[in-house]
Length: 133
Image (cartoon, rainbow, N blue to C red):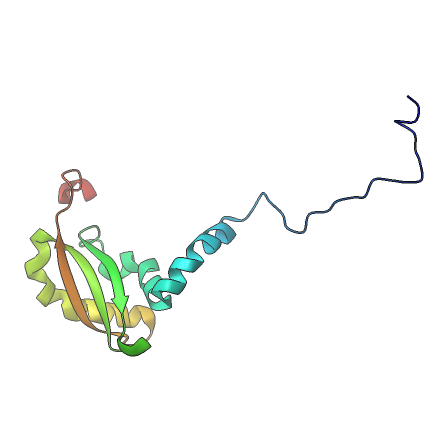
């Protein structure tokens, strides 16, 4: 019995972890999860997505949604902005397109978007304009 608990010269090796498990900073976790999506969609899309509430404004928030950004031949200009627009706002899109293009250019720092393509969608019954105020 004394052999089991004796202090021999052979000590157990100390195992040290190379990376910490918890607690982790929220920014680290979000960056790790979204890195693959951002790399696939591009940094322009990520920048627009992050600033979309300021770009679109409070009036259209929830009614005009950012779906995708595409560029011809992997360029950083002459892009097409793909939007999902609530069906009741579909007629307004030609009138607010210049404003959206300017807002995107101001947010990105250069004119990356040249064209907007709008796809209609129907918001759910719970997402009425009066419930967003």
